[in-house]
Amino acid sequence: MTEIQNYNICQKAIDLKDTIEKNFLTLGLLLKDIRDNRRYSQEAFWCFCEEDMKFSESKASRLIKVIEVMLLGWKWEQERIIKIGGWDSAYLIASTAKSKDEGDKMYEKGETADGFLPPSEYRKIVVEHKHGVECKHTDTYMMKICRTCGFKQRIYEDNP
Image (cartoon, rainbow, N blue to C red; front, side, top):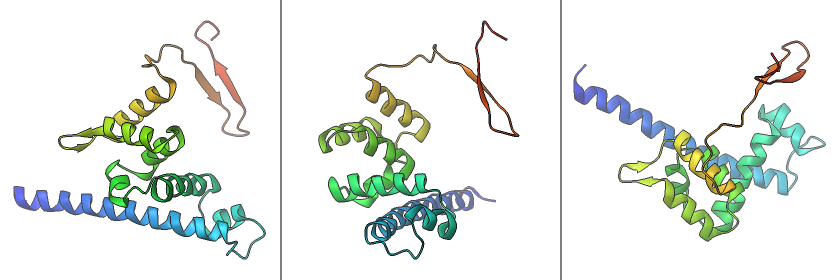
């Protein structure tokens, strides 16, 4: 394949990803409407999400939070939210920022000359902002989780 063909395929992938993100925001608007206006036939919203949508209520709630805070509350354009790199990164801002001004500042920290920081780097900035300190990840622990029953146990370095 030529360089131009490779570029075109990569560009198609980027465009499709942006379309998917825009559709997630549209889905968030619909889920908010369904929840707020009780448009589902089940007894509870979580039943609708999990049984009809095959979508966790937690994911639906996070998506609705992005809609309520950024799109409806702060009046951000969908393109601005998409630029962040995904609605899950947008949720970090929506759940962390206490005001539109703070959200704007957090957004600006992720902007680069080429667009926006990758989600993994941007998440670090948002988490550092939330806790007010740059974390060196020195206070950590491992978890041992039973695949059969889900029992969780912390594994400490001094206790093998």
